[in-house]
Length: 270
Ligand SMILES: Nc1nc2c(ncn2[C@@H]2O[C@H](COP(=O)(O)OP(=O)(O)OP(=O)(O)O)[C@@H](O)[C@H]2O)c(=O)[nH]1
Ligand SMILES: [Mg+2]
Image 1 (cartoon, protein in one colour):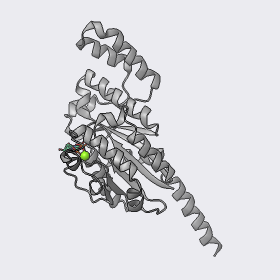
Image 2 (image 1 turned 90 degrees about the vertical axis):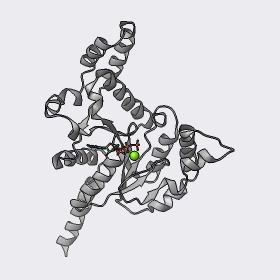
Image 3 (image 1 turned 180 degrees about the horizontal axis):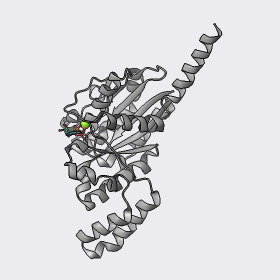
Image 4 (image 1 turned 135 degrees about the vertical axis):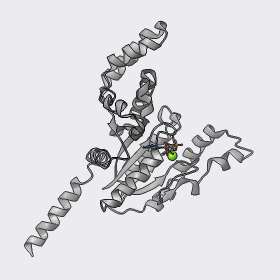
């Protein structure tokens, strides 16, 4: 088995920072985690990579191509489709070592998680390569200051979950930026009650949308998944907790324990 996290979420939600942070955190606890840059438009990230999609295809090249003539978003979709058609490029880069743990730092364009099949196809490929994967959806904690924003953040998370059909973890990122007062009231946003959200949203939105908002609220309620883990990158305990929850989701460690026990058993017999 191999293990992986598909790190997704809106533009600027902290995906690349998260990947770098998890990689460094794992290094300090003597675990090796690799990162793949999956964003063909990435301009900046700080982590070392084992594969970078830009080596295969770059959005700027696609946009400059006079026959294709794409803008930035069409260009990105083209790149992801091109990547899937050339998936053996990644297969070669990743190799096939047992127990590898890989973070895939994905692009932030929302259309990849609402209706375009590329990311879903990629998830299926990873599964066929023996990866236990989950999606890790990051949402910037400034979304919680406004119930209408939170509503849309939750809907985005929900849409990604439905499209990818993977075990799914939601993270509220950048908690270090919250005031201590905001941190204290964080709990109600980590496991938000759709009815309370609806009340808050209704106070701000034109009453003619009341029925629609109510329908959305009961949809969120029906899925009853919309819980968020807080991530404060200035707090070791917070990082540990996020990693532990994800490890449990992808069953990382369970097989290792068994292997270690099996080896201990073999040692005992010597
Ligand atoms: N204080 C703080 N800043 C953060 C954190 N995570 C990300 N940032 C900042 O937020 C900005 C965006 O972070 P990125 O990690 O590039 O976000 P991203 O989701 O990879 O962005 P795209 O790839 O463009 O979609 C950068 O200026 C980061 O330094 C965090 O946990 N705390
Ligand atoms: Mg990024």
